[in-house]
Image (cartoon, rainbow, N blue to C red; front, side, top):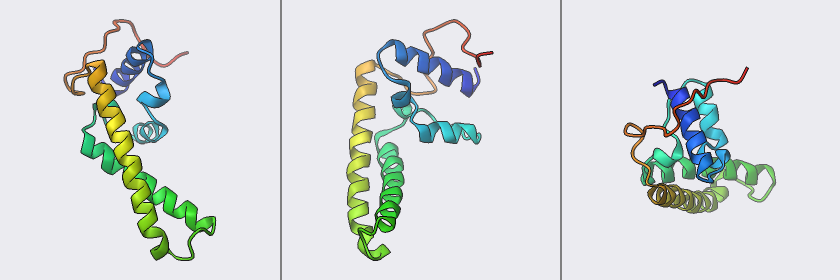
Length: 124
């Protein structure tokens, strides 16, 4: 099964379990998939990879935003608060996704077999 079809079926499976699509596949993952990167959905990524990925993304975004809003006068002053905010954000999301994956009983992405047997292709 190709990656796109597996992701679509995973989204339907998790949706039937009450997980929002935007939680199962945040916008950054859609963007990565759109440019051809076959990254696993966040419920199927390890804790530390999630912490580093989400933390780095938040750190950069938060730091740039705070510089543009004038909260910090230089990149050096924005560095530590942005790193701290990114670390906390990464730890929170990493913990959320791993705990929720465990509660849902999700296997690794390679072992994941979608429950639905019907076609989940692009809508015409």
